[in-house]
Length: 177
Image (cartoon, rainbow, N blue to C red; front, side):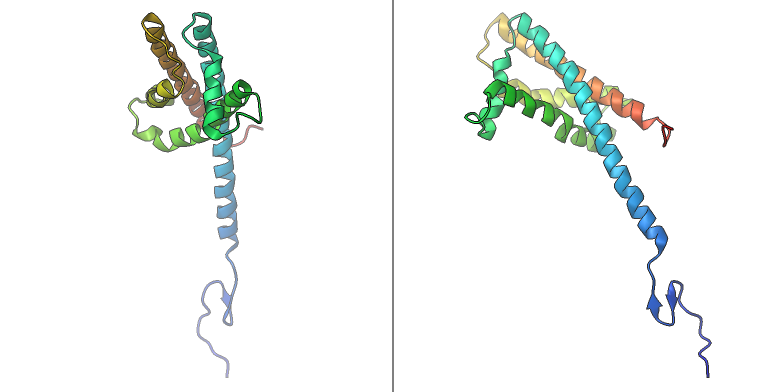
């Protein structure tokens, strides 16, 4: 006699089959994570490039020095392997492109402001509090005030650039073709 009980959905006589929509959902999530990472890296690159311009302007006024990037090289123990200023700047750019944008993406909804560039200003201010001590090079008097002002503006510019790219790319259609 044939068993007439209904078979469970996704099974045939006790054998289970994977639901193909689960695989598609996982692929979509993975693609979304990679796409978000690219957006973050692009935003970080734009923000870091803009920040570099402000820091170079500060250097021309004597309130910042590129030699400060050598501090980063020393912190990670690469001072003997690569030119310290160059290696420090490369690490600075990489930090601006990867961990900071990821942190921004996870915190931006909790920061004040209605738009991503405004969130970026607050985020840049928070980053500045660490930068100002890590890259301090013994400035005093007016040079210290200039250093504080230039580095704060540089971080605001970084945040605006990062936030603007996030905002622009988040409003794009799913496909660019």
